Length: 161
Image (cartoon, rainbow, N blue to C red):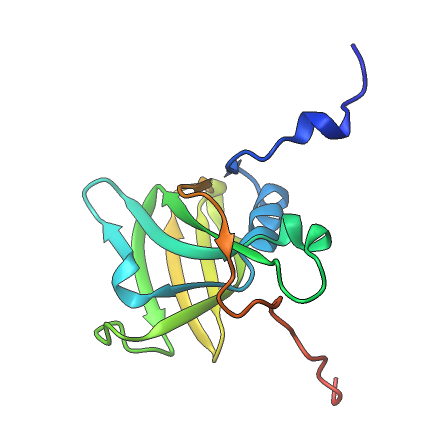
């Protein structure tokens, strides 16, 4: 067995699964600043799945981008399995023109592996999913494309904190 080499990390679509809170932190970091219109979220009660088609900023490629804007996004599906209920706050789900920005994913455990997954949105919005267990998947579904803003998202520090 040998160590991994840089060449082994060829550009491939991400395919990740989170089955515990530590795994979810990795996916959360990768979906930070993803954007999506409200019609791109769906909850299938019968199959107990919640899905988002997101335009994900490629944080994993951020350091490689040249100054001036070779930043990339990619369309990805964020799928949460074993969802028993869903609720939203802080935005109008009926507004088909509303673009939401995903800031983080958090798991809040309950009894026997159940709990809820919070999708924290910019502007104090939240999607809260009651889950039987933690099972989240992230899959890139398109080739990367140049980020339209041609810059990385910024998060100014709160000077009052």
